[in-house]
Structure formats: structure tokens, C-alpha cells
View 1 (cartoon, one colour):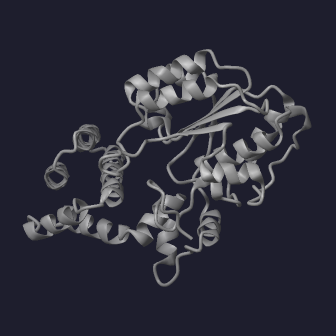
View 2 (view 1 turned 90 degrees about the horizontal axis):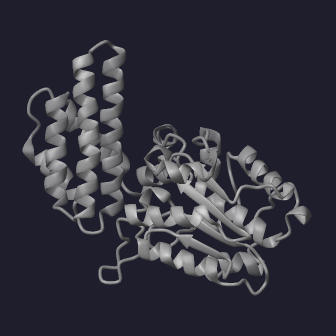
View 3 (view 1 turned 90 degrees about the vertical axis):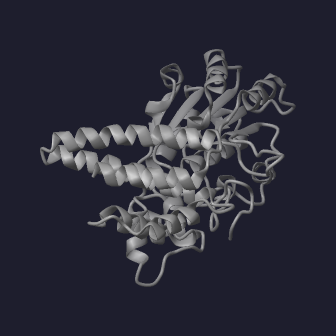
Length: 343
């Protein structure tokens, strides 16, 4: 089953709809016991790579808290959300008066998801928290992910975290905690999640009806590095073909045919190609970073320094290209040329 809401990958469902959870039993138990103790932190920073279950854990915990608003009466373990529960149905529909899912909004003009969480979105959180719950229940804000907060939005969130209202809970998700404001990190209790094992990844994909099959099944589980979203991109978005085309271009001994470069750039810059473009950007950044690390380990310091500098440049260039909607095809071509020149 797939979810057609913006930002949800083909083959995936919204985290609030997930009734099963894989690979993070210890983190789940920690949250349940911490809440029951009545001494739980008002802000939890759930850290880990993209696609490993951070948002699913956040919604499961929110579901648990809203079902058991008095900590001392809550069980020490979280049950799977019941689709028949009124609270679960409200969370799935995005209609809960007690939970706000703060994420990148959809641009009303283009119908596409914006590139950042803006301060206007954070203001909604302020209004949400200022309201009085008719049930006396908790007010929960899931920031998904905090990496997408622009500077003004991050500062606005910080002010709320500094003086949180009573019976409020913040579940702050991050793929890269080092990029967050140190002051935001310092006001949250960190909870780090690891990538899924191949066994748990296979089970998670199977629960979505997206278990890989055929000769590439093992390759999917290996190449996804414990991420459900990476696996779905590899299977449903032509990720393997993109990776192979990229490696053919950068590994070419002679200058690669420009038609191959333009063919890949055309695929990645086509209409509605946001997902594959993002996949490509992440892959090439990881490739350059890994190449720099390998060069350093082999003692080739000059090459390592050159590639490390390029890795930083690529991150900035891609961020600028996305923020200002620059020509994607030209961005991709220049990225490929720079990588080849630095190898």
C-alpha cells in the first residue's frame, strides 16, 4: 500500500499509519519507561540516518502518551497502534487537537513541498501550544526533521524549547545532529537510533508489501545501508540505474561521452524528479566523502584534502541550487565534471 500525500515515497505509508515497528526495541522501551516514571524530558532529540524509523517511533510514542495521559498509569511497554482507536484515526488523518506534525509545507502555487520549514510554520506551533486542551491531554509537537528548519525557524523553535508550556512534549527528529544549533541540542535529551539490520530491514519492507525479490534482492538490502527509504528509492525510483550510470561516468579512464553525462542529467532534472535528484545528491556526496576517507587511510593526503574540500563545496552548491531553484541539469553536469577532476 502506498500513501499519496506529498513527501511520502511510492511504496511507503505515513509514519502515523505504521502499526508495526522494527529494530529499535531498546529505544522504544526507554521512552515508555521514562514516560511512566514521570521524569521524562520535555524534548527528545531522535537522531539517526534518514529512513530508519525515527518518525515512526515519534508517532508511536505520541500515540502511547495520548492514550495514557497520566504517566503513572501508563504501561512500561508500547502497544502497536490500534487502527480502530479514535486517537489513532485522528493522528492518521492529521486531525488530532493534541499533536502538531511540523514539517516542510506544500507550496500552494506549485503543489510541491517547500525546501525548508519556515518561521511561519513554527508560529503555528506557538499558537497550537497556547491553546488549552479540552481533554487536559498533552500537547505534542513532532519536528520532522529539524534539519529542515531555516535559521529564523530554528531560532523560533529554540525560544519555545527554552520555556515549554506545561504538559507539552517535543519530539525533534534529525538526520544530522551536528548541523543543528548547539542551543537546540542542549535543550533536548538525545536518543540515537542505528541503521536497521538487514533482517529488520527485510521485515520492514515486507510489512509494506515491498520486499525485494529476484537476483537483486540481496543487493537492495546491502546497498540500502539499513534505511527503508533508501531501499524504496533503489527499487521504485531506479536508484540502481542512477548509481550505475554515475559510476560509469566517474570511473571512465578517458573523457566519458557527453551524451552519457547529459542522459543522466536529463533523468535527474526531469519534471517531478525531486526524489531521484535528492537521491543522486546524497549518493554523490557520500561517494566523495568515502573517497576522501579512503585516500587519507592510504596515506594520499593531497588527494584526501582535495576530495574533502570538494565534499564541502558540493553540499553548499546543492543547498543553494535547491533553495534558489537553479537549473538542475547544469548543476548535475558541473558536479560530475568537478568529481572527475578531483579523483
